[in-house]
Amino acid sequence: MKNVVPVEKNKEYIVQITGEGYEGEGVARIENYPIFIQGALRGEEVKMRVVKIKKNFAFGKLLEIIKSSKNRIEPVCSIYNKCGGCSIQHFSYESQLEFKKNRVKDVLDRIGKLQDYILHDTIGMESPYRYRNKVQLPVGEEEGEIKIGFYAPRSHNIIDMQKCYIQDEIGDVVIFLTKDWMKRFNIKAYDEDKNIGLVRHIMIRRGFKTGEVMVVIVTNERKLPHKDELVKVISENIEGITSIVQNVNSKKTNVILGEECITLYGSDYISDYIGEFKFNISPLSFFQVNPIQTEILYSKALEYANLNGKEVVFDAYCGAGTISLFLSQKAKKVYGVEVVPQAIENAKVNARENNVTNVEFSVGKSEEIIPELIKKGIKADVVVVDPPRKGCDEKLLEAISEMKPKRIVYVSCDPSTLARDLGIIEKDGYKVIEVQPVDMFPQTAHVECVTLMSRVEK
Image 1: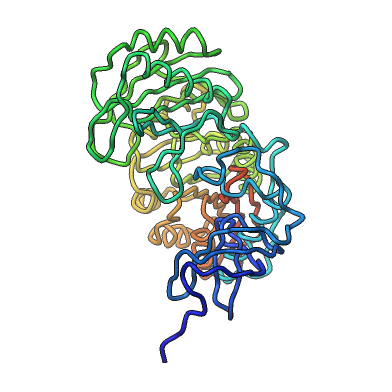
Image 2: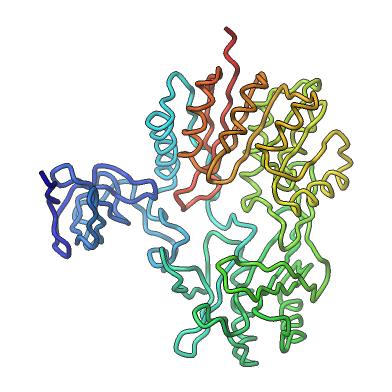
């Protein structure tokens, strides 16, 4: 018998919000049929209109809050509900941290089938605004007006903005100066549909501890008219300006940065610190965007690794070597593996800059390089993994389990793939001991975790 959906599209309903989706949406149920409503909070009674119907769930548009949650606050940003950047700014910060902990627990229990582990409270920030040291902003045009901002959710429509409360204040100034320069000299914004126009994106990076600032203007072609005027206005008005770079990306692509960088002013890079370690950051370098929480995240990974100076450590998906350097403080030897060649070059430079000699970096897929290291007789006492959002390759998990390290430390940016991988590892003779969520991205639904696993002795 065919299931009958108990709601109609475009019809209005008054509902109770009894749950939360992974993006912070409120979830109501009509005859046990879930409806996801952005902007609604658990415990609220709301009026909503059904805007999209699927076989097993629907989406609703919030029309009116009839009974408000005690956890609701007034968002500080006037465009937060239009822009795709801060989906849970209407949560109190305490309830954001609780929401993230609950999200982690849900997937660990449901997807990972884990039991008898310690889940700590989410580590939050003292001030959960203005924390980003990097921002990338698309540039466009509508009815002759230049727009610089973030994309609206699930679209490439740019929401024009003057101020962003999660990025460094320097970004607000750069937006104003860039717009003014483009208007004065009739510089055209990029049209991604027609693949014409010049300025595609603006990227701003700022060293949290050094105060050094980099501004990157991403262009559709190499020729940049009135670049001297752009350099002049930015260098005279941005405190700490260290580098102004033109990045050329002439491809019809959603990838923001191209491969060619032309330094227009100052240095090719800026510097910053995580803990005692100094890092040089180029336009193409990966570097965590929340330096305060990054230090907490990496310190927790080092704590879970529980090194005494005699261990060999594998750092899979090591990126630019940031975690590897943290581990090197207490390890005998660290082997870092990363598939992106430029990241490994950055890692080697970072090791040299910090006089770290007990790390060795290799380019390649972790699931291929680590089994090769094992075949050469190099085995790790502790393995640290920090994979991309899709999680670890199963071949890597198999190789790690066969090697039988004492401990595995898993740093994750996606709770669902973390839960999946932990479930796999537990079947291979390991036990999840504790999980520490860290709020790297306040005002958003994202959460990072550090997990400690120990080998079960039989």
